[in-house]
Image: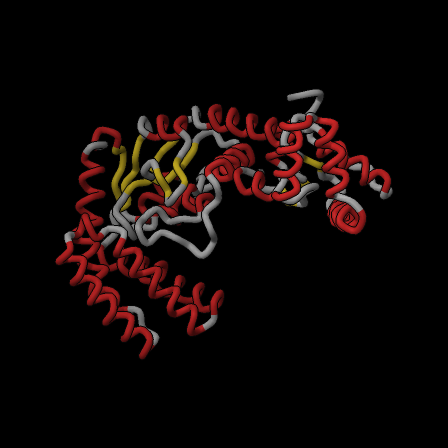
Length: 355
């Protein structure tokens, strides 16, 4: 808490934040409830920064005012004003609660809107998020393990104490794990995680047994350390049920997402590229001959899907991929954690056990 500000309550309540930092700063790290309405764009900020280094703060401030003037200034004030009126309980936020948020606040006041700012800015919120995560992950936790297609993420999502790490990362963890929502920067991913932990503030956590990386995002070290000590429950559903889940998730849903986002023709190319890229990413581990075989089966399955609309033909390569690659890899990893396994059962059994 700084100067009376309860940062944790601010983050946990999804309090709207008008983040006036430049877009490049926002992309590097932002809070989930923040909207980027910059005082200066990237080029203006760079010019002011260069001027600050060469000529000092007064010259930099003067340059900033000359760059953000007239119609540009009016347009930015208008955008802030509209957002403030739409979110009366929000705050202004800049990097450290310094000049940019104070200038934005003063201009808003001239326009008839009195809006508070976050003391300490994004930096204070970021430090709060890091500290909150480090504290929250000290609580007891249980991991849900099991081979691909066992519905681990579904179990996490349906549990009141579950934290869906893959959902927060916008990635399903495997080489076919990308979604149509781009992954966030590392800092933004960590901020999302912290806010989720603060919102739920559970007595214990239910998480999926993840590796260090989920796509391009890595789990915070404090969380990884605790996960390595946690007990594990393992889901073991029949192979056919796992295939049906994966068919729905990786083929039916992904094709629907690609076609609705890009249209029929462009969507088909994106969908095809997505599946080919997933195979290509593991070509070395498969071996080039096996990779070529699976690629040919994938091409054939795509032709059949395009003709009939049926995605079942993908089992021709998916089933051996699970048997030859994913299952042996995960079973080996699970053997290394055998002493932590406290329960094994079907999807329904594990769901009941976790209750």
